[in-house]
Image (cartoon, rainbow, N blue to C red):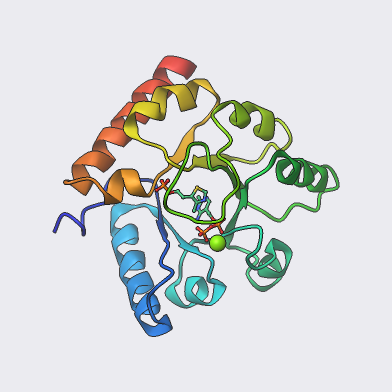
Length: 196
Ligand SMILES: Cc1ncc(COP(=O)(O)OP(=O)(O)O)c(N)n1
Ligand SMILES: Cc1ncsc1CCOP(=O)(O)O
Ligand SMILES: [Mg+2]
């Protein structure tokens, strides 16, 4: 039950599952689609365009070594597409594409902000200072991710974040729904204090 309510209140829910069979992943995606529709949340799939399209997801998140956003956009003109930026150079490239009106993304992610055990092979964590440095290159909305826990929220918001993405902070919590609610409340308060 707690698992089923885990993301309640979140505005965006992403299905990130590297282990399930394709058939099982599609079942999960359709379940997430139903639940996010009921909750009024946006539903994104990680990595898999086929699963995003078959499940009717709102969007797809891809990393630098995943499917190219331009090709995804060609096949899916209305899909929300997000891409990870792990270096400032990657953010700079998005800015250049934006200036040439060639940017097909809907948002990008800046991270990993702090050390994370969720993904191997990522470069060194980049710290909250990177938020200002990276985001000045590209005016699209962005998320921040990587090792983020509840007590980081104020620092991240002060550093310029509005949208905070977490994995372990919620999945490791004893009560995932309560932790989601705590995070959302802390983000909302920090944004109100920053933006009035
Ligand atoms: C919102 C968000 N930001 C970053 C990622 C990471 O994507 P990627 O770099 O492709 O790594 P994997 O998640 O595929 O391991 C994400 N999934 N979501
Ligand atoms: C996949 C990925 N990409 C950048 S950070 C990250 C993992 C975030 O997970 P957690 O919130 O558990 O550190
Ligand atoms: Mg990926």
